[in-house]
Length: 251
Image 1 (cartoon, one colour):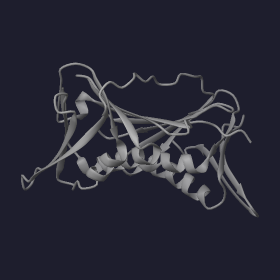
Image 2 (cartoon, rainbow, N blue to C red):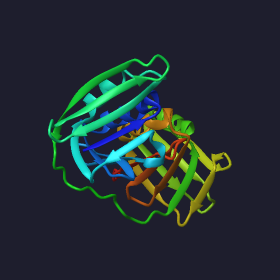
Image 3 (tube, one colour):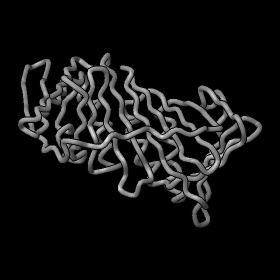
């Protein structure tokens, strides 16, 4: 059994939108210290993990570590009902095999309740990938969204390439069109580390799904290596993090 409350339900919309774009199902893992949502895309090209530490929650109760699978698309539909005054609470009782979602308007004290069917009550443990990256940089989350959206109008493949001159070139190509953006430290990168020049390409459609959390995030950190997955990490005001791994496309 577990119960936890997230204080800003309207901001949680950006997270559930990203979840629904990546996969129809999510593994919800709850301990007394942290809440984690795990999502793997059907084609196995992207993995997302949303981590909410206990300090970021209004409350959290967990008898033991619990891992269940729910429909992320259905969760998204319900969270869309949230307003800026709502506190979101998720509560699971194994005896009922449903996940109860409530929205409490803290201003008007109106309480609304919904129930989500639990797909699997004994979900497998998932682990985060581990690999070395050779280019790392950070920027404002809204700028990263702009980069991906600009590439959308040009081509289906987005390439990240870092150089010995400590710059990162993001590019996309289409028929008679080309998009290129040079990223430098301070313009617009907050920090940049090029351990060695790196080049990797990713499907634009997958990257596009990965920018959904930028509406609530403050900062984006990106790490990659030549022909390796790209790691995109979003940080939020209350210490929450969302990490998305996207598999490379070999050109």
